[in-house]
Length: 353
Image (cartoon, rainbow, N blue to C red; front, top):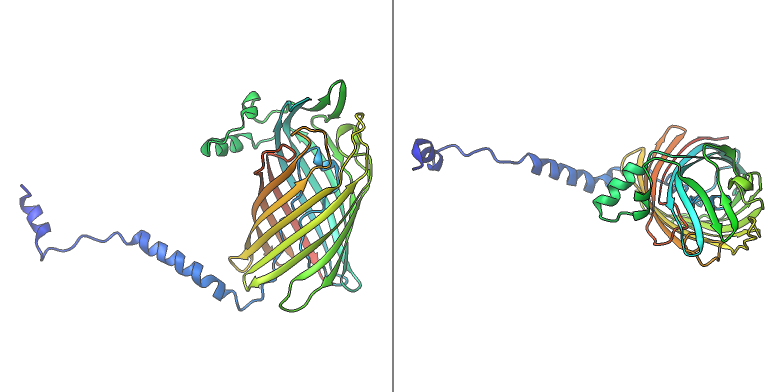
């Protein structure tokens, strides 16, 4: 039944077949590298490159001041940094409660900014945003991920992929927000200052922050609120391990109102963020963050009101004087006062005095 070949294979003197050790060797190598990686990094003091500079990117919320998630450490006196940042923001929302709305488009928000270290433990900065809206390119990717996890948004199926279907929010006969297509305009500029109040070896670094927003964006096109905003906050960071740095932010923003033809009054905005940066190679580190934002609106609708919870995942790549940051941000809360999905990138050039 077995035949000659079967008898040879079953003989104790027959050579054993090769063992499938390839994948096991690869797995052992990966585990060894992962376990030994922190030890290989102890030769250098990793102080972190900072968290992803996220904020609430929902198109309506963009008209308000938000203090981006930021590290507590300030630039040294005379040191400066300039950056170019771009966020691709995907949004789909329709009628909510008594609000007649269509939001189906992508927003690109590009910021040119910089900061400089002044005196003892001070840092000041300026941000200049530019906003444009179009059909976008992220719909197929988002649909595929939602279908994979069986968490599809039925509103997405009402519109063709990568199309601009409108930006209009209306309550009764009053048009609250209406944004045009294919516009590239200046948003509301802001200036900020940070003061490092505590920095001691082995203890967390703590800073206080303040910012003011100028109404430079056109309110009629939803590129700005038409009013100044003010914000204060605190930032902290601490290196728990030679390869792991944790960050935390807590901010309070006071937007001035009323705004829009509907004379909407506004509440203060509270934002919170926690995150960790883990170094995995000499220039490369991964970042995981969680952010919470309250909305300034109190209209009783999910489209404008509510508290948003988002998760962000990305990496930092530092090379010479440059820092590249890339990340993805997803709204994990049931409210609509945040973008569905955002891709964020920033390139920073830093130079000492």
